[in-house]
View 1 (cartoon, helix red, strand yellow):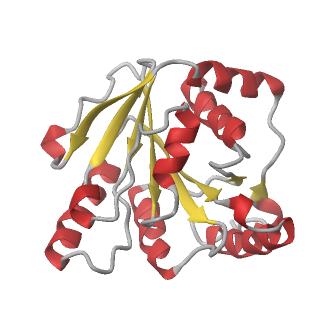
View 2 (cartoon, rainbow, N blue to C red):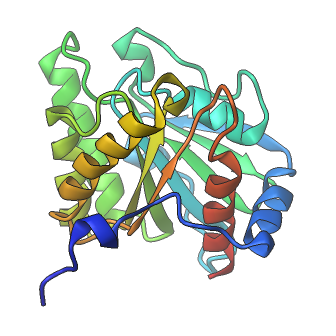
Length: 227
């Protein structure tokens, strides 16, 4: 069965109920703490067997603003640390939000200068994590609103499809562009998402600087803990 037209199916910033916004606010009022960095799959924390703890992760190419977004979401200035050194970023970082949610910061992808053996090793780890992590509810794929979906993003989106993992696009740095430019990027993103079976139909536009979209993203994560 064919999907609907992506221009109508993939909504940009759909309305969120006051109840969901409040539930998201309450969830992120809990303390968020760094727990561990994982370099190998055998270091992963055991998934919650009773599904009492939701797990979501954040993926995005390097310099997309992932660390800034996680810090802004949790109200912590240096919870997630950015780095321009590829070797320091190639870990899965787990954060514990109020013993209710694992927030997982995936390694940034797209480092052209990273050694090939390092890239190959981390692609294997990432693929294995995405395929085998039963407690993972959703991947939030961050896309820079100034550039839209780039060639380097296609591989992660295809990987999520093959792993049958639900993902949702979050546009970052929207304070850097006009509303008209944002709508134009949304057209390109919608067209790309129409190719992917596991893409979630709502797109959230955010700014870590102004706080735009953060309540809606908190609400989306909070809803996953209740579904």
